[in-house]
Length: 192
Image (cartoon, rainbow, N blue to C red):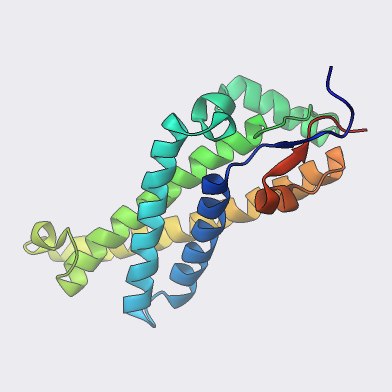
């Protein structure tokens, strides 16, 4: 049996570097928008590369990095959320079911932001890997791509705010600093 308060490594270095790099790249892309296009595009490519890395690491990575460890059914996720609202949710060493659902939602939304951004970049600037496909695209498509790109950027921001609220709630509910654990990789095996 494990001793109380034993510290264990939960988040491997690649997950932690990915997490904070993705946060920084998204903030840079979001804040630069149309003002500094070169920086915006570089941040967007960085987000895309990080998302692709995370998908691969979600399949072959360490235990708590793998999707199999934290992707749960919608019923399990809803049951967890109901328990969290009642302040009686079970503690998980890795991602809880709501956190797992948020990881997937963020990855999908970020993929949609970056793909629509690549298409828009190809359409407006005749640059990037999709420029050839966008060269003869109809005029209405440019406006649609811009709206789609902005929608998913703002939707991703909403997801991030919900993620932060969930981290704060789980940290308070279980008496642990989840932000610190994403820096150190360490969590307590058991809580007092």
